[in-house]
Amino acid sequence: ECKKASPSKGLIRKDFDLLKIAKTYEKFASCISVLADSKYFLGSYENIKIVSQHSTKPILCKDFIIDAFQIKLARMMGANAVLLMLSALDDKNYLELFNLAKSLNMSALTEVSNKQEIKRLLKLQYDIIGINNRDLHTLTTDINNTLKLRSLLPKDALVVSESGIYSHAQIKALAPYVNGFLVGSSLMAQKDLKKACIKLILGENKVCGL
Image (tube, rainbow, N blue to C red):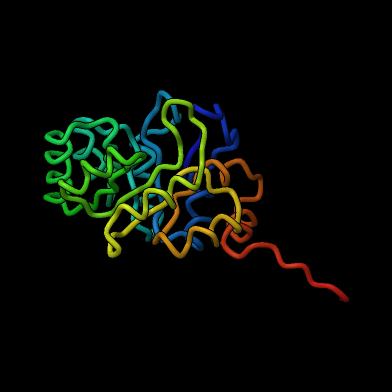
């Protein structure tokens, strides 16, 4: 994820070279998430355009999407998918935005963070389900939230674990239950982004006797 700042951590990456970040992610990620919210994350829709023009990966527009205009703008800027948070939308608005995204040939990452939102989701339509490990009230994270909520979803659902992913050990623990991970702050906080990606994906191997 291309993330300069966040509400929970403030400024994360002072040296925010967007093209350099995108180029690094190109080697490791299956999709690149770009923050579009300017108030809390210091992002922009222009950043989506920049990354989409310099990457072959699908681009996720990550914003607090509540209006059709945001989805249309994201598509115009080159996004291939949008984040839809059930915590911010009622069922009617969610379906309207979901169907709009589909009509624009975009995917939707539908975010849930508790059992109540999953109950709602299972009565609605969805593409990819994102389980948020962050408590949106306290802003604390617990990766066990992925394990608790994954069991409530269909086995064939495409699921992404979001927030609080900092180590290869966590990746290994959650990998049998999900299809992917959305990682932002832990990577953005590292000076050597390439090394951080390798460490997260492959772990650290010590070679003895050499």
